[in-house]
Image 1 (tube, rainbow, N blue to C red):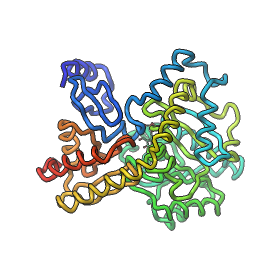
Image 2: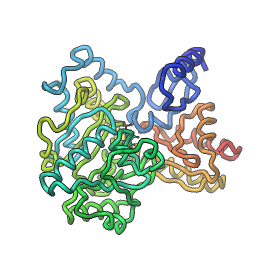
Image 3: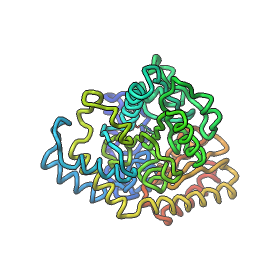
Length: 402
Ligand SMILES: Cc1ncc(COP(=O)(O)O)c(C=O)c1O
């Protein structure tokens, strides 16, 4: 740990709100899968900024795009056309399968807020004024703003902040009957993460996603997929729902769309998107030329580097390694994963201790609960790097650090 760490940690404690317990390391640079601290020490990053730096740290294509655009024009508001915004929107529409429109904001929570507003505006036109409710899932996570928090199926995160936004109810995932029971004429949309991330990597089955699509169609209800964490090749296809063949009416994106730079997006099928007219929604910074240039370069590079195929094959390798570890150590209760969105549950609640020890030993991991360790490496992660982690975990878990 370098001396700069102590200075910044003290300054942070005396000046920044206490919303995160920060780890005792100061990362000052990164490249691909690797991070470097202020003492020059190297770490393998199996977290990628919580599933954000999918292309890897400081990718030259994104760096170059930002450098080029920021020197030309940084900001001009959404009242004007700018370079890169329309091209990025068209690129996303194309990846989504065509016939859609995009709205750009700055974060995942904002994208969810936009999706909720769009669903309610659409319902006010097509279903009547009383159809306002949204059915979401237990254990889901959709953000920290008051509506995205209300959508989040984790009461412990909500209670202290009541009254939060009304109009949300929650069901278990992978239970079609429970969903149908929750639907009535007051419901305008169903909101799901195809793979729940913050909840601890719990995938919706493909059958369930297709059944939910059919139920929504039969009842004239919108289907919203929150792909803020599972989108952008994290699970293999560019959007996780594509593996199930269940296309949503509205999709939210953020995190890896900018490879670490702030961007959020609401993507909607054109007939749904047309519910919004000027004045309904907006954002000062959303869709600015610098972030749109970065996101375009990011999407191009992810495609060129076949990030989706790498996520699928490296993810299978990682899950197989963890399953071997489960048999060998008897300390792991379950392994879950789709592509490079992976988690394992320890039998004992030692996830935080394991993550902290791993950081001290040069591996950046993440825990989503006392028992669950989540792995979200950049998609350029190699099998050799996974082997390094497996070797480490084998020792760490058997020596009881977990
Ligand atoms: C599925 C999902 N939706 C929304 C969010 C909120 O995103 P942000 O932190 O950018 O507001 C997250 C963040 O983890 C997420 O995983």
